[in-house]
Image: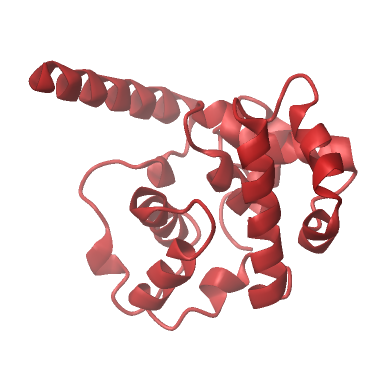
Length: 188
């Protein structure tokens, strides 16, 4: 997969290289990116690979759910909600096997246009509109994915998909916290 050699999102170079080079790891990281820090979510694939000895979607999908849950719960847990996330990751892996031959990159390499890409990403377990847009930004701006209509969908504001350095990640997270605080203050 052409693109960056690492995505500086975890603070661990090996984990950052894994999510940059392995589309399945990247998608697992995005699946985990909910109600935990970016760093924790995207370190999850490296943690799982260390515990399982692989990140093969077919093997994960076919693994006994209790065994996979134990790998997700092992201290430190992969997510603050290891049970629901274990199920989500196994569901994601099953879908990658069933629909994409176990190759997460086929989600975008076989997309015909931006709308098709958005539909493919949105169909993945746990992938809502914000994740879909972030991944589309990442694919377009950092991996050079060109699809009809994709350039027109790029937001003017920064997303995680734009982050290329640890400093940019810190600024992105600070901006996100400030936006959330302003939203809370406005609704109070």
